[in-house]
Image (tube, rainbow, N blue to C red; front, side, top):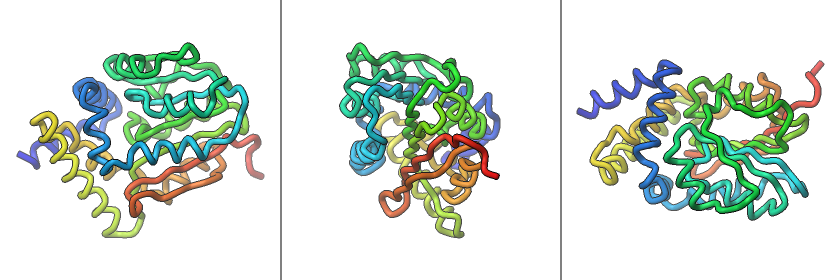
Length: 249
């Protein structure tokens, strides 16, 4: 049964359209339990990691912030706290997540949009900051999502990514994937009686670039890396990058 479930997830992750639909279906299903399951998935470190990421963002008086794959609004609430005079856009693929985020983030400075992170309906050069918590690994197309983040950022603007991570060296990368897959299987069973609900995390990590390659891809897509911080023995990482103001010679 476990092998059959992972095969279905793997097949969906290999196709951008099917991956997008998988994300829409899964996150619609888990929206109500997301705030309970996510802390357990990270052994109660998730909120700490998100607070660290937002704390690493630069001080700006009146920023425009975009939080992609905003989920139930954890990062948005921290952005409101850090930038009380800023404007914030929360973007998610699923209506169920946006409804939960609206309930938790009752603030006139926040606007929500139901959009695909590979096709953001935002103007060019409109954002001072883009945040992404566990988002880009779920993008139907990683490179298209990075191009969109780059497009909406102002020159010199900051992108902040919190994501599960794996080292390049074998077998440590494979071990990270298996840890997350088995742990996700248990959480899916506990909260939904459907192990496949969270098996996708480990499976998606198999095709997601290792931490060294990810930084190379960011540079190729017009970003300059400014900070990075490994978390929880390297199972997760925060990466900050700025939109390059000019191409390297």
